[in-house]
Structures are given as structure tokens and as C-alpha cells.
Image (cartoon, rainbow, N blue to C red; front, side, top):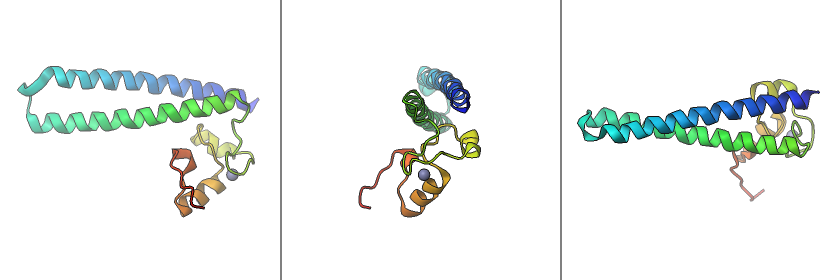
Length: 123
Ligand SMILES: [Zn+2]
């Protein structure tokens, strides 16, 4: 069954992201420990890079969790917009996609990005 394979892929991806997040957070802590002794400019830059990665990682985690939740409700692989099946090729590259590529393209062209949880209700 496609959905079960997909669900386990999502769970695996979620685990990876959580591990990555933990190591990024540890990394961030080590910046704090090193404090002012290191080169200030480089330190700040690296810290900001790290914070950016953490933010990205957290977004991935919440999107993966959302997809897993949809899977548990039997909605995985179903477009949240039109209710059609999401193309298997799309799910292969983007397992946490919540819309089919048609709706995603449409959303992007109209500025609504459902998958990213950025909604614009003025339709
Ligand atoms: Zn759709």
C-alpha cells in the first residue's frame, strides 16, 4: 500500500529532522558557551546561520507532523484543496505535500501557499 510506505517515509524524515534540530540546538548552545572570546563577527554570522537552520528545521518538523496527522486520518496523498490524489512523483520528492501540483502552482501564482501554511483568505 502506497500510503503505508509514505507514512513510514514521513516518520523516518521526521526522526531525521528532529535529530538535526537537536544537534543544531546543541551547536547553538556551544556558541553561547564560547562567548565573547571568539571572533565577534564570525561568531554572530555563524550563530545566525544556525538560527536560520533551526527555524527551517522547525518548519519542516511541523509540516511533517501535519502530513503524518493527515496520514492517520486517511488523508495522506489527497490534495487538501481539490481532494484529488496528489501525483506519486510529487510525493516522492515532497512526501509532506498537502496539495497536488496543479493546486500548488495555482496557489503560488495567486500568492496563496497552502503547503507553507500561509493563507490569504481574500479569494
Ligand atoms: Zn489539488
